[in-house]
Amino acid sequence: EVQLVESGGGLVQPGGSLRLSCAASGFTFSDHYMDWVRQAPGKGLEWVGRTRKKVNSYTTEYAASVKGRFTISRDDSKNSLYLQMNSLKTEDTAVYYCARVAESESYSFDYWGQGTLVTVS
Amino acid sequence: DIQMTQSPTSLSASVGDRVTITCRASQGIRNDLGWYQQKPGKAPKRLIYAASSLQSGVPSRFSGSGSGTEFTLTISSLQPEDFATYYCLQHNSYPLTFGGGTKVEIK
Image (cartoon, rainbow over the protein chains, first blue to last red):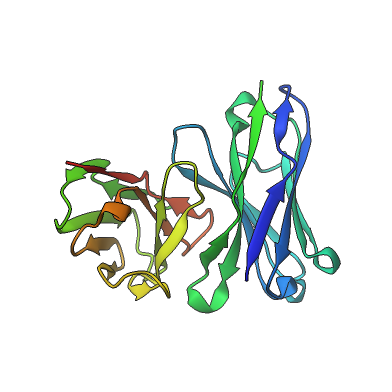
């Protein structure tokens, strides 16, 4: 069974840093692009960024709102995805989800984690 | 950036009703669009990918159509468990962008 479990959320002051993790199981993690998506309280979904696979040199993409402040990385040996968040702003307050990308299914998100809440205050 | 305009933002419907939700892209995205359902306090769940392909395990009352700039999610006969918020997502180009969401409420 595919599982994605986020952790690392919490309360942080503006200007601070936080590192989120997403532990993957039930599939070959290294075979998949992985994304982060966030949702501010009471708001819609916002794409944060992506990491590609080793064969794609682990290249990344980011939303403009986080570029230069957030860094996505992965450790295929640990089946883990990370989101390093620096220079946090109050508007970064959100539930952060990791999502698996299904390349063979139009690069859509076929599995999501349960989310972890980040509060910047 | 590609803007995804989703409509309506909310709707009230009764069990058994046919419901249609639309997403319009600001530029052509082929069929690079998915539909997701989200219930309060839960992660989104994929319903449709590649604009019209039904996710395995999703009831056949859900269907998607469209290509280019206009896309539709249809629920043929609304069931109690379908009351939720629905989002479209384009993954044709970066940054990926979601529609604003449609909240489907009980009439």
